[in-house]
Structures are given as C-alpha cells and as structure tokens.
Length: 229
Length: 403
Image (cartoon, rainbow over all chains, first blue to last red; front, side):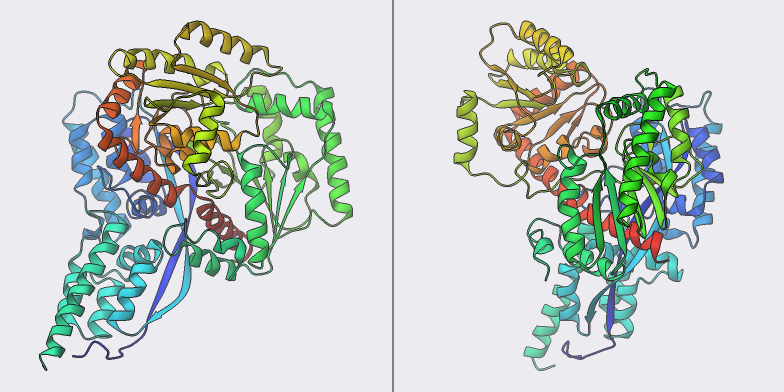
C-alpha cells in the first residue's frame, strides 16, 4: 500500500507523574517483601513500570527499583538478578506482578541462614505514582507523520502509549502497534513494534528503535513505489 | 508562543516545552500562590523568580508573596529551621509567641488585600508555615526544602502542629520527611540553565575569572564548591587531593562562602589553610553570595568536581556542575547520591580514599571524563531543569484544584 494513504487518526497523549511518599521503608529484604504485600498497587506500579519514566535517558544496571535497591544497597546480587529478570509485561495485572516479586524474595530468603540488610546502605522508601494524562494535540494520519511525531514528542508520550497501554488495555499490543496494524494496515511493522521489549533499555532507546523501524518501513515502501509495485 | 517559555526550547528535552503548554491549558485561570520569607538568595527564590512569570504568561494566575519579619522573628525561625535539621535548639514560649505574633501580622496584611485567597497555596519552609492558622480558601501545601528527616524532637513536636493542618506536604527526598497524617509528595529541586550561574560562558569569560583568582590553566583542576562548614568536609577533599597529587600534577580549588562574620567558618578556613601548607596548587577562595558568574566559570574550568559533604541538603550544586558537562564525585549525604548515577555521570564514594581513587581514575582516562560529563549533562537536562519543575507545579495544580 502507499504510505501516503490516510488511515485513522492517532492522537498522542503525554503524561506527567507526581510522586507520593508513602512513609514506609524497608531495611532488609524480609521487610521489603512484607511491605510489598501491604502497599497499594500504585506503589508496585511506581517501582516497576514508572521506573522508566524517571530514568528516560540512562540505562540502569537493574530494570526496577526493587532489584536496584537489593543490588546496590543490600548487595545481595543473586536476589537482585532474580528480581531483575521479572518482566512486568508478562503480567496481566499489578497484583500478579506483586505476587511474583514477593514469591521470589520469599523463596530466596528461605535458602539463607540470615536476612541480608542494607547495612551501610540506605533503606528502601516506598512511593507511589499519580499519573496525569496530558493530551498533546498532536495527531498523525500517515506513517511519515507518525515518524516525525515520535522524533519530537516528549518521551512521556512514548511511555504512555507503550507502558501504560499494556496495563490500561491488558493486552500485548501497545497503542502504536495497534494503530499501525488497524489504522495504517501495516501488519509486519506492527508486529515488529509489538515485539519491542520496553523493559530492556530506556525511553530514549525506545524512541530510537521506533524511529529506525519507521524509517526502514518508509525506505522499503519508497523502493516498492519506485519499482512500480 | 510565550517568550518566557520559548527561551527554554533549546535547552529542555525534546517535547518538554510543548508538554508545559498543554499542562497549562488544563489549569487556565487557576490561582496559584507561593509564600516564602525571602525574595533573593537561595535556590528556591531563584527558581520562583523565573517560574512565576512563566506561569503568568501561560495563563495561570500565579503570585509570589514574601512575608515581613523582625530580628526576633528571624532568630526564632532560624532556630526552628536548625531544629528541624536536627540541631538541639530551645524555643521558649516567648519565642514561640513572637513567631505566632509576626505570622498573625503578616496574615492580616496579606488578607487585607485579598492575597491569601488562592486555589493552591504553596508555603515554603518554616518561616511562613504558621500562616496555615489563617488560611482562607483553597488547598494549602507546605513545601519543606530542608532535610527534616531527623529533627530535634521538641522543635518538631512544636512545629508539627502547624504542618498537620495543611492538605499536603512536599519534600525533596523521602528521607527528608517525617511521619505525617497528610499526603506527602516528592519534588526534586531544579536549576535554571539561563541564569548567570548556569548560562553558557565564552572561553574569554572563563579565562577572566581564572585570571582574577590567579589560577593557571596548565594543570587539571579539581573543584569543590561549598560553604566553609565542617559538614562539607573540605578537609577530606584536601586529603584526597594530596593522595592524587603523588601521581598526577593537578590543582585543587575550594570555593565557598560562609566565612564573613562566622567564627565557625573562619575556624574551618584556618584548619584548611594549615592542612594545605604552602602548596601553590591549592586555591582556597572566599566567594560572596552573589558570585554566580565566578562559580559558573570555575565549574566550567574544572576537570572533575567533588562534592564530598558529610551532611547535605539536596545539594543542587551537583546538578549545576553536571549541567556544565563535568563528572561529579560525591558522597552519600543528602541528595548528592540522588543526582549522581554511579559510574555513568560520576562516582558515589564512601571515603577519602574512595574519592582519591576515583579522581585518579578520571585523570588517567580523559575519554571517560568527556563521556561521563556528556552523560551528566543529559541526565540533568531530563531530570533537574526548571522545565521539569514547571511540569511538577502545573501537575500539582491540576491534581489539587481541578479534579
């Protein structure tokens, strides 16, 4: 199909996060699990999903706050690695994600003689997110427009349409891949965007990957049009 | 296009200026009042001086009021501030009555002109905090810029009675807060990249400042900017420099204020001079509070910036140095470690030896200095610029006053 084809409109929504301090803190891995059990789900969200909203540029050693604290402050590298490998995209709900994290910590502690503590490190502070959706007014109808918008938009919009979409819609498809599939009728590009794992990198890396995929598709389509297909 | 906001377009991350425009549309006409004790001096006043005009231009009815005080009031509020930061202080009943009396006079003066009425009132730090007793309409938020994580108990119990009457409190770090029955929010301080302290400087401007202080540019410069105060541990930085000096020919510049009319500052400076001896490569500079351009130039001239304080507030000078593309070696106190991404924008160290080791590592690897400095600048661009602060304020306004 021609990429100048106008499909349905994609409207970009950005977001702004306000962080609320819950006043609960853990000094060791057991307290971390116990508090993880009782904090609101917004807090699980804050320390896993929206971790990426706060670390948009630099890719950290660990992909969530729990793993980072256990690795950097408690220095229990095995537990940190086990918590790192948890991919929030594998869970349909925050409750299921919470259960998995608690289960990993409990299982790890059951094999230890003593509970590792933060020692000289700082305690873990539980916070929670309040996310405000912000319509950007930016609308795209073609892949070219979409590509240009991705290159300019605040990374919180990329977060919203990829990370938030996963929880909001409880499906594997993110907003971008869904629109490209149904609005632009480009299933192969949609599949590639859907396959992107946002938890392995940063929002800027994700922006860069999206741009590369759009550029590849535009180049391929340009060659096809030149060849008269 | 709003000129006050557009000037940040080239320095803010992609899309952020647009986000500020869109956020402001959600809170058009809302009345947002800030109250504090000083119009000039301190990072908070610096940010408010810029944020208020931008918000006004964006259609938010933003205002900034400064309370008036007496010498006695200043003394009590200094004691309260020190007590909140853990220093043993006594607030007598007479002092407390002075605090309440001056607050009541301020409330009356502000209320006479209808200035206490707003949709959202941000009251900064302890000085004006008791104004909550005279609240009119709207939501009231106490913004604590201090590290109140380990307050002196009697001062906190006296002061807490005012704080709990607010609708919410805002702290710079979770560990700076106390148990409270009201919601507590987290907002990091920020820097303004366009002020004299942070704007781009030409080589000539940097050279002029170095010449003025007699600092030659023939060796790498290690820099610590901090007031002469024992908690800033300049002595530790000197020891780290002395360890490094055995392997690298470099200079150490310690720049700060806090000496004039302050016996403790004078004593600290005397100790440092003694520790330095006759080393011509160490420069102990005493800067006045308005030396923004000088600090800017020193940070830009430095190879590595050190912030090895033992006790610190948020320590936004770390972000200032990072904005100039410098790797920062910092301790774990206060907000220093919250700004440094260890091994990416600098190093977090726990000892004098750790600082010396990391300084040597950086001086041995100029490529790492360049790479870390560039990463540090991008990290600040995305996390510690005034544009992020604007987003935070506008989001708070929306969450508190529109929903």
